[in-house]
Amino acid sequence: MSKKPIRRNLGRGLSTLLADVDLGSSQPKSQPKADSTVPIEKLHPNPDQPRRYFADSDLEDLASSIRTKGIIQPLIVRPSPNNSEQYQIVAGERRWRAAQMAQVHDIPVIIRELDDTEVFELGIIENIQRADLNPVEEAVGYRQLMDRFGHTQEKLAEALGKSRSHIANLLRLLTLPDEVITYLKEGKLSAGHARALVPAANPAELARKVISKGLNVRQTEALAKSGGKQLSSKRQLQPPKDADTRAIENDLTAHLRLKVTIDHRHSSGKGELKIFYNSLEELDGLCQLLSQN
Image (tube, rainbow, N blue to C red):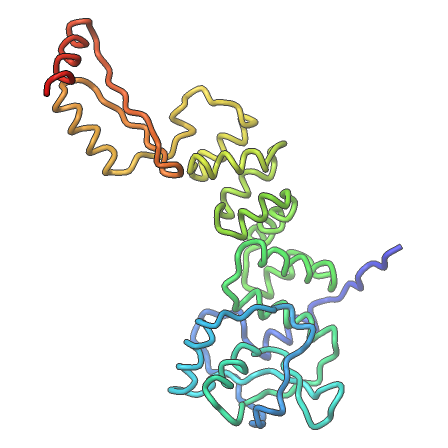
């Protein structure tokens, strides 16, 4: 039987750590003062760091900034568990990597005595607050904090500066099938689309339909409520027409003196053009016009 996670109040585990690094605020504040500077070669990353991928382009941009302005915010480190003369990075591995590219030799640091649990917790929080995460990655971070450390949605919302509904809505995305979650990671579906599919009985099937038809969130909600059946008005399943399509419709209607509609599907590049007539005389006139050289 698996052990239940130990439930902890925010205390040292979350609120104090956030105060150390001030990750959640979008307001300009004075940066925390470094305890000291250490040679870059004495720092090494945490092998259990949740974040594994660092985009080269982002590192290049940060390295350029470091060359010009230096490292503005100190790294959070702790004494290395394996070597008393080394330090393990708790928060700021991206800055450390960029500093190497910028050929910086000394790094400003804040040294904290943290245990392995606190280091893991802060690593997740830093990623949630700083990384350009997709909705699934953010939701996984919240789930890890709740499952491993016993934090509630209310406490997370308060400590991270998020609304409880934001956290709850993201967590609901993790109940979707793997296929839909993959679409979400790849950006083929937005978080709004995915939330609309959560209560559906066949979310994967509906997700494919949403993508192929280019439906917006409101249309996706209507599709999910119908169970994937054709709605009473076909236009409800069609994305709104763009200005160019409407302009072509108006031009053809004026030229032919008959109503013309265009149903263009951007996903496939295919579509339909419909011309409406009210009498056989109008049909005959259209045929004559189309048969002219």
